[in-house]
Length: 151
Image (cartoon, rainbow, N blue to C red):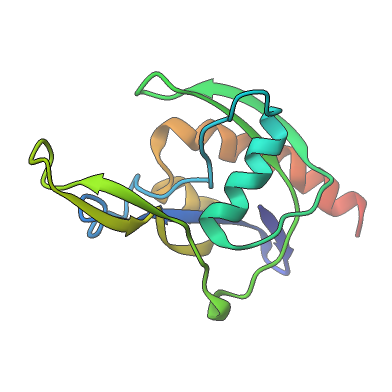
């Protein structure tokens, strides 16, 4: 999600929940994302996951950004869209079970996403997971043109 401001575009990123990510900022933030369910269209999964991780409802039109392969080997399909969100409202994320400590057999419940924020392009580029940076660059290219065409 992005929005046009008087200083340019801002980009909505989320921070993963849990103890591993608690004190990480640089390279830790992400676009909302998740797994595609059986017989689910990729765009439908993206809309569903956005809502599950933030509690926010997205509205198109959605601009396809293509796909990329993460360092972990996952294929990530992404879309950009304009939206608005007031940070004072916060987000509501679904919870997940996490084995913690790793290989301990003990599980904790954590929010999949613990916070969200708007960032300028330069700030978002520092914070986003490096494997997702090309999506941020493509969003800036596509959405800046759309933002200016629509006034």
